[in-house]
Image (tube, rainbow, N blue to C red; front, side, top):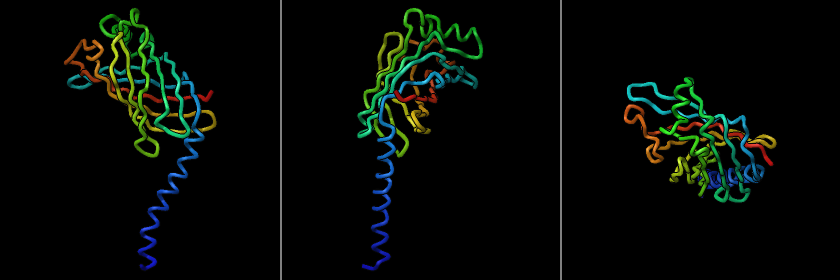
Length: 192
């Protein structure tokens, strides 16, 4: 076999090995338990037919992540949103979202998510499956996660996902307002 042909066969294998070796220390370095920081941003959008819609955020939340240094699949996340903290640019919409028509924040003061599986999909990406409970109703949901950075004892992710609000009896206003709530979250965790 000619040296060039051998190089073309061996080079991809070396690149694969070197990328695996490079990723391993990063995962080991990220291993540990993190508390979700109050500086995280939990944003959502509900689109409206014809344009516009509702843009909002949650200002009160809590959670923990445990990253397994040996297997990303063994990692876990638990997260709690407090619907009373929902905020939109218009107070009347914020009040309506807290009301019994949507979150019913007085009766159901929390929305929780507990992961059931984590699957790595790329060098810095993963899918997190889990159980979301809102208004006392639990369904399986899925979120896409992208690692944004790891520095010192802080880790940052962007998390996106679509949740069908009708599954949680929050479908008031459909079909004028779409059934899908689009989440776009910047999550920062501080190592404990």
